[in-house]
Image (cartoon, rainbow, N blue to C red):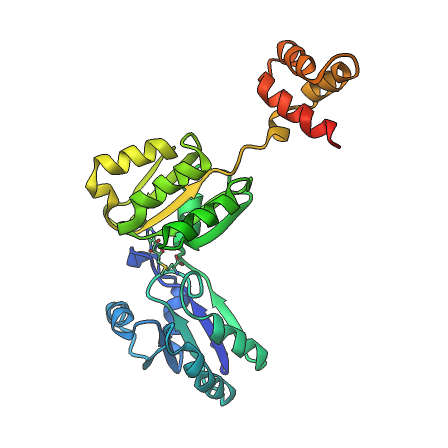
Length: 281
Ligand code: SAM
């Protein structure tokens, strides 16, 4: 594999299981001039394990803006820089955004080396709809701001994906149940790719009880996924809509919903809601 001089490589590293490092990631890390790491001591253990002796420099939330400038100078001088974070894909709830933005603005080539990311690993095994999803990263630690954000997301039909810390997991699931309703389906993915990997799905109310009952399930790293808001329009199929529209021409909205429910087997509450929406068109 050839490595491009003057390029910034954004390199994903494992989220637990070291076997998840890619051959390409190892090659880039070995051959880069320097590795910019979120925590050089933490990543040093990974590099040691794989015999990587490339010099490292620290790039974290507190020095990123200042250090990025010096990295751009090095890239422009033809050096190759690899960026890693503590785990998973840099920039995903991790540093690197300013560096990548500045590098691209300066005309430097930025090359992704894809690999593990907790969000995609969790979603791919959750069984929740994955065609459309929204990643919210970490919710605020403050109860008020967290609830306000959840209220904003309440009607979103896409699967919602969050990262959460162990000391807040129980509280967050409780807040989600309060805002989204306890019967919303959700999945907790804990300790992915590690010894105690657990992927557990239930309603939000069920998950609250499960976390309260077992302190072990509140340890480690978490991805929380919540099914999107149910869409009445999707649940009312074309035939039910046709029947409902015909009845709406003859009888009241309430009667139309009740009769259409009896004829088609679709729940009358859904039909009533749907009738309200189409009457407003
Ligand atoms: N850049 C990383 C990625 O690509 O997934 C995420 C970094 S963020 C600072 C760390 C959070 O990611 C953890 O608090 C947890 O919510 C989630 N996470 C990371 N590794 C995980 C794992 N093995 N299992 C479950 N969640 C994980």
